[in-house]
Amino acid sequence: MKKLVGAAAAAVVVAMTSVTTWAVAEVIEPGAVRIVVGLKAGADQQAPARAVSRFGTRWAAPSSSGRAQLDELRAKTAEVPSDRRDQAITALRADPNVAYVEVDQQVEAFDVTPNDPQYTAGNQTEFSDVNVPAAWDTTTGSAVTVAVVDSGVTATGDLAGAVLPGYDFYNNDSNAADDAGHGTRVASLIAARGNNGSGMAGVCWSCKILPVKVLNSAGRGYASDIAEGIVYATRNGAKIINLSLGGDWSKVEADAVAYANLKGVLVVAAAGNENSTAPVYPAGYAGVVSVGATASGSDAPAYFTNRNSSTTNWVDVAAPGIVTSMTNRGSYSVAEGTSFAAPIVAGVGALVKTRNPSYTGYSLANALTGKARKIGSWVSAGIVDAPASLTATTDRLAPTVTGASPASGAKTRGTITVKPTGVADTGGSGIRNVDLYAYGKYVSQDTTAPYELKLDTTRQNNGTVALTVYVYDRAGNRGSYNRSIVVDNLAPSVKITSAPANNARVRGTVTVKASASDFYGVNRTELIISGRKVATDKTSPYQFSFAASSQPRSMKVQVRAYDQAGNVKYSSTRNWTR
Image (cartoon, rainbow, N blue to C red; front, side, top):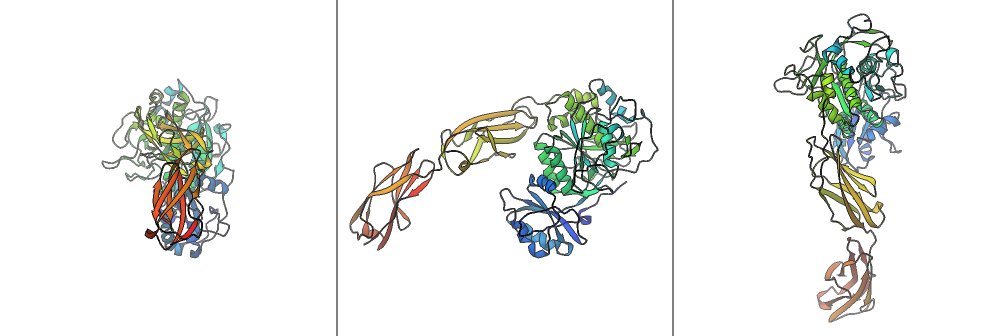
């Protein structure tokens, strides 16, 4: 049984050049450490790299595909010499552009070396433990895409025709074949073609496998590569992601899981093989269906599986963990581990998705956990029951949103904040996200109440702008609210029409008259003397009076006009003395 590799075993880096481009290391230099740097929204993406350039950092070979996935999470990876790691991390954490810094830990596949010779077709008794044959009476699946984020997948034997083109984030190329054997075993349990007279049957015979290679031939990889793989799978049509791997907690990995959840993807992960109650990750993250393993033909926990305790409650469901699966050479044998319980659950999720195409990841997870059969407190919901999962219903009620600010017809300028009101979920699944659209195009999103949505009005045409606030619940239902505002980023016109001439000497009471105009109306005008507001007039014709004796000996005089949106314009300056 393989052990987890902690952060201390990781190799990590940060680097920068005058080209101002971040890059992912393809090969970690001896004595170097790989780190992950998370950036704040709207941050200067090059500033953190400049902050650590003095610590012997270097540019690694770029991975454009991997970088594109991490960009979705506002994260970067880089290298730094191991003896200067702490200094670099301290400098980065002090940078106001940086949200977090972490050592890029290594993770491993959860499995045990197969302990039996080849099995012939029909010896997959483990499927009966979760009633898969009864579910097949209803459906054997459809072309639902299930991503196997693992050591790759080799399209051999019963996986021929089931595997889509994928990507290798460990070696940064498009060859996602399996050189470790682990990912192919996982994929075979999900989607090996059944009822074809040869080999084995997967849970979802007609599913498509998206291979995402993030582990090397030894079954090891980095948390940042896992994150890249999750984002890639989500962006490339996966409805379910299987993660039969694990390690310590990682912010970039947790953000990737949240990203997948936000897009409605079901994430399933193996709970690990340490016979422990301590959470491992990604199984321990919120938004993941964590899978433990049962012993053969039993509801009892397998000897190796991680599990809940009286104080930890992080393993959601169970499935058989001693299974027949297909190797990357097309042969069949028995393997043990929660790595092989997880894909059984992912396959059942794919059957539910076939039966209910509109179900989001939340709805699929509820079907798996809500219909599981209780087997003891070592797992929260119980052992997955495939046919029962197919009968699960979901939240069908749209959430509500009853209003929004700014007010209807409000005059706005620059970057404004739209604040929806009356946001509520009526069906029980909870609010997932709130989106803002202008002119029918996506503008911004918020996932945490109170919801605040930014709109840069300088990107809109001046005039009336139709806004729509969409509210989504976790089951994918949507509510909306429409509001129109007026965008005005043009300053009013203003000029002094009557006053002492420029360079005049003034005394007594001085009168200044001005004119101002704006398409949407002038809010007010102000008399400014030497940078200080002296008087205000809100009604045309605009007129101001002041005592010369109350002002500085030398005066710079202007009239300032504001329109209804807050744009401001100054008249030309007149210089006076008294």
